[in-house]
Image 1: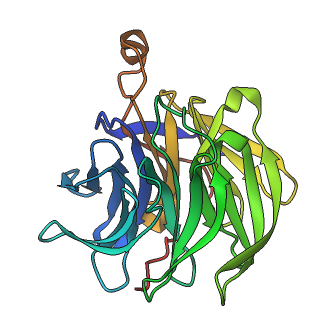
Image 2: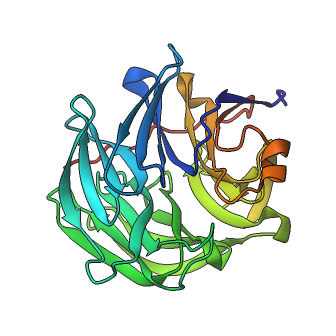
Length: 299
């Protein structure tokens, strides 16, 4: 077993860093700071960060096949032009829910952008229950609501054979699976594949590795855990020097590094002095497993 190394590669002080995505063409890590309304791009070669500020909380970002990016901003799916820092609205959701915003999002293997909503938090992880929905934005920009009654829509990914969709509604303390039809983008047969242990706290962002195992960032748990969705067993725990670990993705050369975002919102001064890197971006090497590249939105 190679030795695992964890380093804070970017001491960003994000209020709530989220949605890390590796962009291979630029050797960069994209991520967002939700309440700061910023999309950031960290160049792993020059170590420089560029950021674009948008006009509402931005909760996820993804690559776009035709260039630039897509992002979930407020309750809108948007296209983001990095060069001139402009956004164009592709679709709007939850029009009847003024208090809602998007949370996590990711693109499926057919190029649809999946993202879910939630009520705006009154405190970190405290929300009006069952106000959110899960949506999918098709390449032709039409939106489908997959289900509602969601508390905090969070981590999502697809199995390597594209036949299973994995999903987290944080306050269910569960990682769920659905049968997935890649042709139509439809889901069915929801079931739980992993129930969180008490010390793991709240399941947040998630990604899959090249062996088909899931990695889940544990909010307030200060760790990422590796799960086998077929057996429901936890295979590995990697603890980080910050409590509010929010999401994870693979990147770097050969997708052999893991990047983890974190938050500092809701930490009191005593907690912050104990974890000065809270809100930073972390790189984990030596896991001995690789990830897969992220899918670009096809619209």
